[in-house]
Image (cartoon, rainbow, N blue to C red; front, top):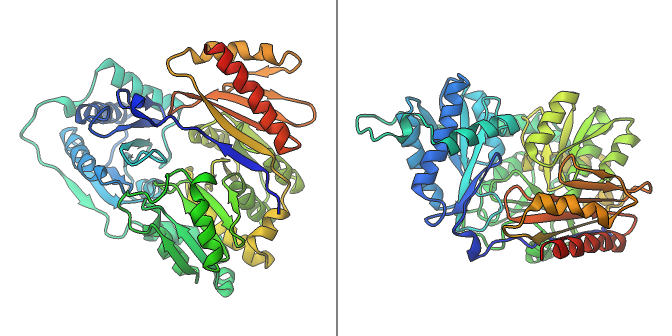
Amino acid sequence: MDISVSYLWDSYYDDSMSAKPIISVSGLRGIVGECLTTELIQNYTAAYLRFLDDARFSGPIILSRDGRKSGEAILEQIKSIVALDGRCSIDGGIMATPTVGIQIREQQAAGGLQITASHNPSPYNGLKLYSPTGRILNQTQGDQVLNFFHSGLAPNATQNNESFEIDSSTLPNPHAIHIEKLLATVDAAAIRKQNFKVLLDSNHGAGSTLGLRLLTELGCQTVAIGDLPNGQFSHPPEPTAANLVDIASQVRTTGCDLGFCQDPDADRLALIDEQGTYIGEEYTLALCLEQCLASNPGDIVINCATSSINHQIAAAHNCLCHESAVGEANVVDKMIATNAIFGGEGNGGPIDPQLGFIRDSFVGMVRVLDLLARRQQTLSAATAALPKCNIHKTSVHVGDHNMQAILTSLPDQFPTVAADFTDGLKLRWPAGQWLLIRPSNTEPIIRVIAEASTLTAAQELCQQATTAIESDNR
């Protein structure tokens, strides 16, 4: 089987980032004790609470964290900040990002804070912010939080007040409702009959706590890797091919039917087949769509950086595939606007509205297992039946240079192709190939992604764009 998907993300994680935290509508990230200080956490959390107060979102705040050790102290600090704002909090302990979303709705909470730096290395931590609907804040809401943060306006959380009590309870069984909702979306009995042997690599993040229980419920024999959620990653935390070489080998040598590989907060899922081949993150969503649309056709949404094979899958089921700007919140906005039945991103983040409008690696697990059980296929066979994905992804460091100026000048390098600036710059050729060039929301880099009729052609498009960017960046 030849799967032409390649990744050369050259993430900008070095000492030059330690002096500057990443603060955006997507959340807050930084190196703990250096740029991610207690004062920054206090002010950012206070700005979020001010947003909830102004929006009159009442109720408790759900708090949780991924497995990083630094999250324990941050969680206790945020409990105090929430209490100073006159609110109570509910401590979910270590939970996956999608579980937090579900619990916000179940507890009728005003919102939630997940303490995580997602795929960033272990010295990092950060915050993800939720709305009362259990989704990550959209652009408008995130901008409001940022406005409060940058203006310095904050509620009582920034005041020196010694006369308050922390009102915080705990969730005794936070994962049960998530598992119940997941099982309701698939034929659990059919999956159990297959007695799948599955390798689960949670890489010491938040995914194992729910993942192992879920796979047991589905009758799977599980080989658990990195199941202790202590944040001590055994390999770089982004689930890419280069980072999962040893895991892929273990899937094959242990005789597993497939491998599930999660990022630290468990909202993304990469796949490895029974032969030890890295299937990757692009195919996670594609396989979910194959499973979903066969019995429940409807509109779907992907972002503009996700493979066009999803358009082909939708068309084969007489469904429409809409595109949004990159970012989970943008996909969700488009899903709501189009009444889509499913959506997601090519980074391994499926979104099932039956669970909530949030990326969920466990949705990927149950949908893929259901597809294999229904078809009586191996993962390699199911993937081979999909349209071929020839996509290449890389990135270019830009430091403090003007990213928008770089993007504006790039169309001159491709004068015969119309430029779309909806999200960065996307160029589409009549034959179907495309090139996307856009600044990262979380790193000082420009991401370059291309899809073409061959992997070589996609790589050549990325190289042309990279050369142009580096020329403008000098």
